[in-house]
Image: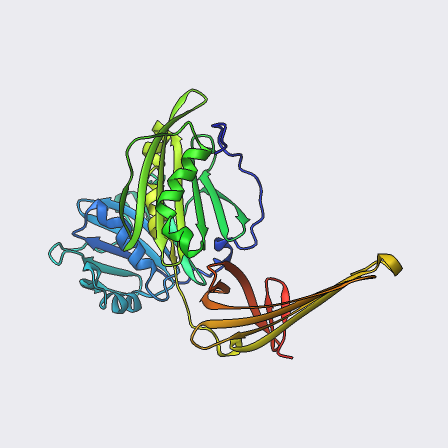
Length: 395
């Protein structure tokens, strides 16, 4: 949303580090899961837990009626899923039955789950009608979503929604909206790696930024601190108007270890009633998974560059060199040197720093002792390290 109160146009942007680009996976087998003894408030938590089961690639929510919810997962067979859920700390451990394509669960340990399998309807033998499958139309949930896993984490995306993204330094911003309803409701998600000081001030600086950028927003409350997925969170709501229409706004800020997440939903009042819950679903679904540094990544790497231009009295050259050592305990040290020469002067500069490095998927997050942070997409290939398009070697 622009500062003048108009909704952001859905531009066609390219995002090299777009999280969802890593979601190219095969669907695999499908399993229908019936979970009895649940309430509507359990649905999102159950879906999140199912999405985190190793081997599960996609989770879809189906019907919910009389305390029984239906889910569909891809990637595992029923027996494998049942075995994994038997170790759950929640009511999903109460598996009452399973086969290759279905699993039945009593979430509260009391209710009897009903197997979810399509039954063919019988034709009328007197009329010579053969058995045939009867398809019952089901109204699509406007907030039907899938929890996608990607290297280093997971995130929910809503069926039939457009997603566009942009990147600014250490921050990625995704703008999404229901197809054809860009002017009715928008969901804006920002994910970044702030400095330690910025993270400490996140719950105060975030609301201050919103109020400065959108002065027409009227706070409905003072905001409140809470938890999302066990992580510290802050929730606030606003009222505003766009082109004479009353609009509702909700923002959730979440601190996921060293990663900051801000999710804002805004739309006119009627649309917000339908789509507003997308803010909570998105904030809850975003997860990040750290992994150990590869053995091949450890050790000392070198980088150098040289540039020159002009001749004679207009000659100028610049060279730089860096040596970085990555240690098994997740720390690093770096030494740098650079020189610049002109026709009449030379300049030499040396430097050094140290800090910590964290790996998530194919990305490294470096933090130095000054509190500065930068992210690098990396690839190990042929004994060399390609990091943010810069080639580092062992020699």
